[in-house]
Structure formats: C-alpha cells, structure tokens
Length: 200
Image (cartoon, rainbow, N blue to C red; front, side, top):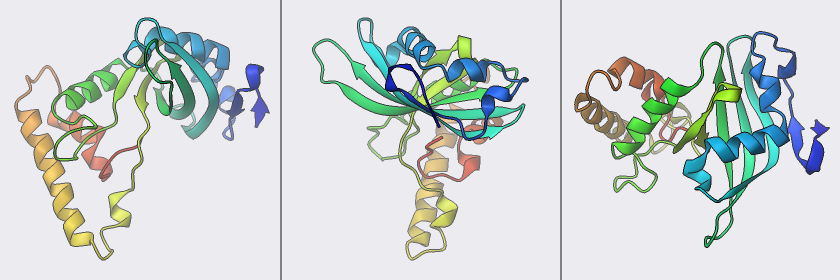
C-alpha cells in the first residue's frame, strides 16, 4: 500500500499499473485526477455545485488485460445538504468505455429497481461514466451471494425471493424496445450472477 498526495491511501495489491493492455488503470489510481474526473462525470452524485473528495482508492479485482474493479471512498459536499460519505465501484473493461453497461444499469434502475423500491428488489444506483478512465461507476451496496445462503435454514424462502426478482426483471425487459436492451444482456448484467442485491 502506498500513500498518495493529500493522505489518500491507494491500495493496489494486483499491481494493475503494470497492465500495459489497460493503460487507463494507472490514471484511475491517481487521487487528484480521480477527484477532478468525478466532479465532472458524476453530476448525478454531486449536482452542479457539489464537491467530491476522494478519501481512499482500492483495487479489489483484476483480470489482466480484461477487466478491473476499483473502489473509491468518497465524501460529497452539496450546498444546503448534509455531507455524504459513500463508496463507489468503478468498473473497467479492456477496449470498452463503459457507456453500454452504464446505460443498461440505468434502464434497469429506472424501471422500478431503485433503492427505495416498494418490493425491496433493487440494483445498485448507476452514477456515471468517466471516459478518461474508460470506466462506469455505481454506488456500492451490501450484498451476499445467494448461493451461499440457499442451503441454509431460510433457503426455500430465499429461492422464492430470487424467483420474484427474476420475474420482476423479466416483466420489465419485455416492456423495453429491443434497442434498449436484450434479455441476454440483462442476464449478464445481474441475475446470472445469482445475487439477491448485487454489490459489484
């Protein structure tokens, strides 16, 4: 672990800066650049006059030459509102800019899968795209892999809950124009992962 300027801790246990096939990773680990890019690219989070401070950066997953997940601890200050501290996930895939994945997540989010949905079935909030990093960003939420719980005492109830979530998603997908998203793309984005509340 190295200490970056302004006491922002940067944890890179995978050594992603050395991944020459994904040069944007080195940029994404620069705290000063990240602050600037988040202010411009995450208006959904900061608003027009808000300030985003980066408190910590952690690389949590890396498949060399293919994809990477980076966590950012942030503090957001907006005029007239309480300060907010949160963690976001930045997702980078080689030769992609994140626009398609962000749009898909945003379509799902807007189709009744918000964090305050009445039935409690939701996906993490998509926050924006950072072209400089070839990254799209979502809010991090707590989650447990459902496969770990299905064999437990509440497995049957959980299985019904997962089925309800899949049914809700299927209903939403059938109402979208084919140009928005295909059921195959949606299944790759979430339910195929087998999570009750996806956190990454």
